View 1 (cartoon, one colour):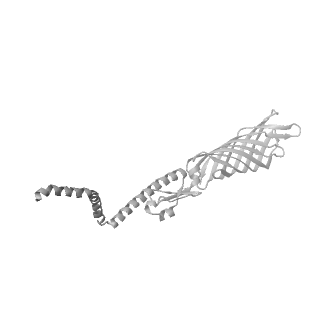
View 2 (cartoon, rainbow, N blue to C red; view 1 turned 90 degrees about the horizontal axis):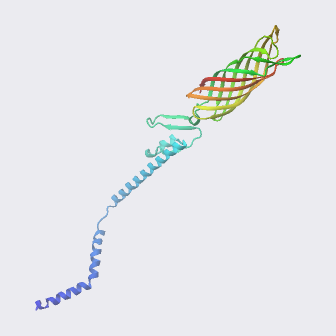
View 3 (cartoon, helix red, strand yellow; view 1 turned 30 degrees about the vertical axis):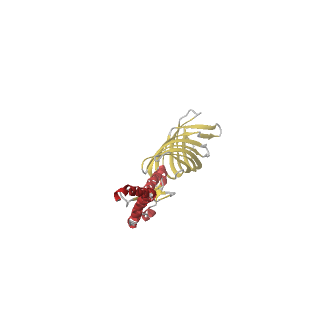
Length: 303
């Protein structure tokens, strides 16, 4: 009996299975998810992993920021503020920068305890910290337009030999400006009167002090050009003897000058100067005013 009904029972089971196919699919998918959902999660470990990832990201951002600010420091000469640098975290100690008008603090990476403070103008122009200089100098010059006032023959031009000058200069220069004081001694021989065919014996000697000012044009850290002018006073003494006729005179007159110069700094604190000076000396009682064209070489020390 059962054997005869066996095919019939199989057919009924298959029909039931077919009708509930969708339910089986749902159970097959959701049951593993419910099992996984009941599995416990280690929240402490997940938080620690997230914290480590955030720390690594922050470290990477700091490294990128450090690299960018180092480039800015090199291009724009932005200075490092050491006080704020010490307050910063170790990884960010070299990130804190501050603009300064006159000074730059340079951290020596080989010796963190050594800080060199220097004037920013010196870095840009080669000027020393103070810019004060003392320059002894020697010059040769030629005198022009020097005449003897004759009541009968008018003004007679006095021809003179090439003269020499000794002195020293005290000055101070900034980035685009300078001031200085010159103390000079000039001497030259008189040769002859232009329209008198007789021998002439004599000389002129001058002691002058002139204050000058002008512009300083730096080319680089070793070369700069100066242009300016000045005023002062000159004490002149003229010795004149023409065939026994002596016409000496000494007097103090107003004087002024114009200058153009080049200063060289081959090594720190050593200065070499090349200069052209045009100088006007005032008129005396029996001698006219005169012009001096001087070419000068100087060398000295700059603080």
